[in-house]
Each structure stands twice: as C-alpha cells, then as structure tokens.
Image (tube, one colour):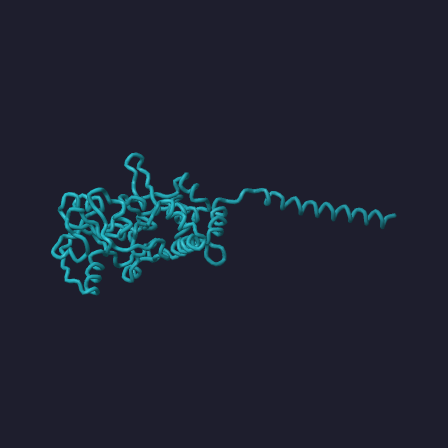
Length: 299
C-alpha cells in the first residue's frame, strides 16, 4: 500500500511539474512582437535583410525614421509632376517610389501612399546628385540616366525605363531634321548629358552640324524659351518632350543616344541598393512595371 501511495504521489508531482512548465511558456506565445521584430519580419519578406535575417543598417535607418526620402522631378508630365493645386506628386516615377517604400515597410504600394511613407523632394538635373551625396535624400528617381561615369559615384538599379534623346522645334521654324540645326541654338537642361550625346551622334554620322547650346534650369523654362523663340530647339529625352508638345511645335523623327533610367542611391548604402534592385527586377519579371508604364501612357 505504501508503495502504491508513493507511486501515486510521484505521479501527481510529475504532472504538476509538467503543468507548471507548460504554463511558463504560455505568456510568451501571446505577447505581441516588438516593433523592431515586426519591421524585421516585413523586411525579410521584401528581401531587405542581410544573411542571417538582420536588416541592413541603411534600410533600418529608413524604417526607424518612418519615411523614405526620394528626389523626384516636379515638371515632367506622366513621369513626375507636382500638382500645383494639391502639392501631391503624380507620375510613373512617383508610383515606383511607393512600390519601393512598400517593400521597405512591408506594406502594399497603395498603403505606402495612403500612409505617406514617401517624402518627395523636387530635384533638378543639377541638384539631384549633391542631395543624394549629402544624405538629404535616400533615392533619386528622376529620369536619372545611367552612365559609366555616374556609376562610379552612385549605385544604380537595373534600368526601369529606356528612352532616346529627341528634338522639339516650333512648326514654323523651318527645321525638319537634325541637319537643319547647324548654327542654331539648342536648349538643354543643366548638368544633363544631352549636349555631349548630341555632339557624339553628329560626329558618328558625319553631319556638318555645329549648333550653340544654352543651359536652362528646368524643363518649363526650356519650353518657354522655345515658345518665345529664345532657342531654336529644345532637346532632351523624347518621353520628357512628349509632355511639352502643343499645337505650335512637334518632335522631329530624329532620335539618338538611348537613355536608360535607373534608381540611384548613395554608394555606401548597399543594403538599400540591393532592396531596390530586387524590387525593380521583380517588377520587370512579373510584368507589373510594364503595367505601371501603360497606366501613365508612356511611349
């Protein structure tokens, strides 16, 4: 009898012990995950984590700040245009920024837009590089042409859009082709590559064309200069020119120097660059990038 009572006592003791062990783990399974863990999980899903699941420091900095800072254009219809009535940025490149922000914060692009997870800053061809270098913005998504020289200074994603340089002239100018631009005045944007690629193209073709170039700060200023005949031609990427076509001008058939646009980040921000690269290549492969271009009726 004593043996049975001891056996029963031991059994009850072991059961109590097991129950106690089980109850000690229960609170852990019901405790909400810390915000950092949630961000880490979201970033893991979007591919922004390094090996071992740790978020890259440059991406974590953006998560902690709560907003992605993006340099964009304010004056390119369909690509990136600031709505003067609402102050909002509207265009293909702005929507691409929301897509990237969604990957960083683990939400959809629509949620990124609704929650204002992107802080846009208007840039020009002259200011976008310096603003990126000094850390005022995280990314440049502003018709930034990828070149070998620029790749030495910035990280660039796989191209998200390919275009060619074009020529916009007044219909009454008598200019019908690039060969009619000898001794004419061509307006270009400050710090753009247009002047150099124009000269290279006419040299390769053997054209005897030696125009004068004038630089302007922004595309609206160029369009105005063309309208008032301060310049004879407005030259930049054709997709940009398309936003400034009106009844009094037209784009010539000549096209040269294909331009590939990439998302740029500071050279040291390798984690952010890797996340952006994954997002852009995924959008290319699944067709969503093309869908986005079609939404904005890009040529």
